[in-house]
Image (cartoon, rainbow, N blue to C red; front, side, top):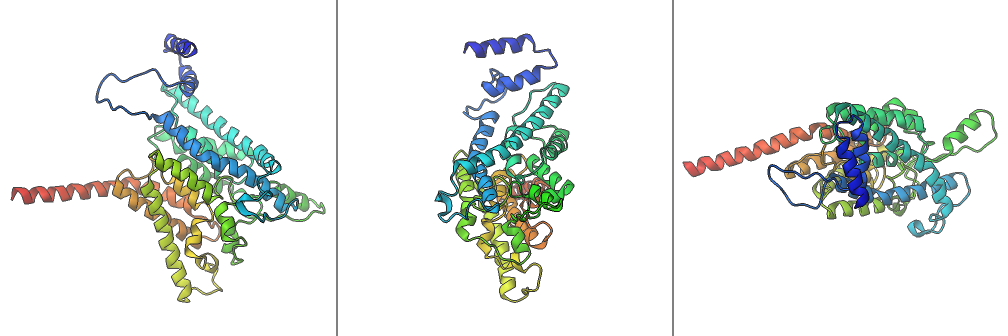
Length: 408
């Protein structure tokens, strides 16, 4: 309490200083703020923005840790150091300290750059506009390293984070005012600005890009392939992994998106704490399954033949779409963003269903980028206010009709 009071007194003595927001960011990160409201309606609740953000981060920590193990595992399998794990999720070949350390030293710099650049920009804007530093980037800073390839260059990540924070959030007024999910804005910038680093069969395995450059320079080395399931299916080559590997996450992919099992643990935390909307999660799954069934029906009716470039992903068993790519991670951690998603209960059902439906549609019809959840969520972020508007107006019309009947 002595340290907290001393810092609070220091803050009060320097409340007119321009640099105070930078100090306040550290102060409120370490302690609960001392300020209390004095006017208006008071609602007693144990949650605040910082606690909410911390819970979301805790829900993502299992994905982060698993991603570190999987990054090392995919590296060693691709380079021939170990064989494909035979025991699945509980395999001794997967849960090794060697795998973890390889992943740790690759993922940690991504986390540091994400938080360092993002928070620095947040503090600069807070000082410039003389307002408190908001906690919104705490979640974005963790999301970004989990949705990018393991070998993403750090300078490239820094540029993307700067773009996402400034254009995706600050120009709209900061946390709570943005219309697009900041983490997905960063990911979209990376994809469209540096597409060769965000797709292909090299970027998902640590060291594969460097090995490819060495081969191009004339060194006598074996080529490394780390093609994802979506990339393989898009080329009609089959999945190459069994269903349990897909579910457990022992597959190439972005750092935190591969394990549906681990993501479900995070979903449980968000639903239990009432931070993430179960309506959006469930309706997104239903939308994806509906689109998957439609495509399977098209294949079974022979409207789409094996010669079609869309056949591989269309013929994928309808529910397998939930286990591959970034669908599960996007649905749980980004479609449920309370700022950019629909706010009404009925709107959440519509919003979530369309996210899932459009995700699988883009995944199948865009062979150059066989993953649709990012674009689907960003698209629905734009339409979320419109969905809520019509839901509210629909309720208003129903009440007006009931009023007319009663007064008639």
